[in-house]
Image (cartoon, rainbow, N blue to C red; front, side):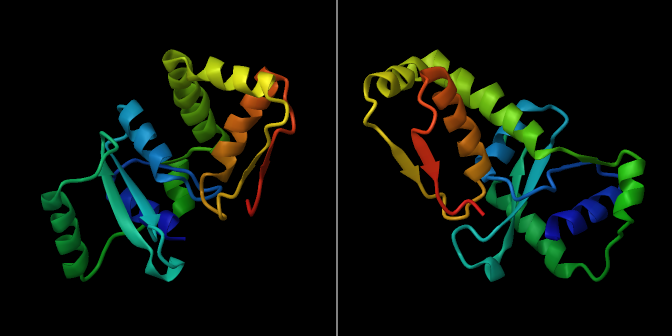
Amino acid sequence: HLAIETARILAANNIPVKIIVEEPTPTPVLAYLANSNPDITGVINFTASHNPAIDDGLKFSPYHGGAADKSTTDLISQYANSATHYNTCYYEHALAAGLILEVSLQEAINAYIYGYIIPVLKKLGAWADILNYLRNHPEFRLILDPMQGTSAKYLEALYKEFATYSGRTGFFKLLHTD
C-alpha cells in the first residue's frame, strides 16, 4: 500500500496525516476535503490517471485542492529522485500517537455527497429538477458502469438519495463496482 507507506514517512517527520484506508478515493473527493478543511494543507493521491495500475504515480494537490504549480511538482520530483534514505515509523505507533488519523469511507462520503454535492445541487435548483424528472418519467432507468473506478461508492450514495426522495427505488443500477 503506497498510501500507508507514505503515511508512515510523513508521520515519522511529524507531519500529521489523515488517510482513507478502506479503498481508493476519487481525486475530486480529496480535492474537496482539502479545500473544505483548514487542517488539511495538501493531498497526496496515488493514481495511474487512466493508465495501467503499474504506472501509478504520486499526485500532489495543495490546500486548495487544485493542481500544484510546476515549481512545486518539480521540487517534489527533485527531492524524491535525490533521496538516499528516508525516515519511517510503525503505522500503529503513529496512529496511537495521533500523527495518523484514519478517516472512514463513510465519513468521506458524508462530507462529499451530503456536505457538498447535494447542497450544491439544491442551491442550483438541480436537485428539485432531478427529483421531478424521476417522478414524472417512471420509464427512466439508469445503468452506470464506473469501470471499477473509485467513484462507485460515492455514486451509489448519491443515487440512493435520488431514489429515496423521488420514491423511485430501483431506478438505477451500477455495474462493475468491485
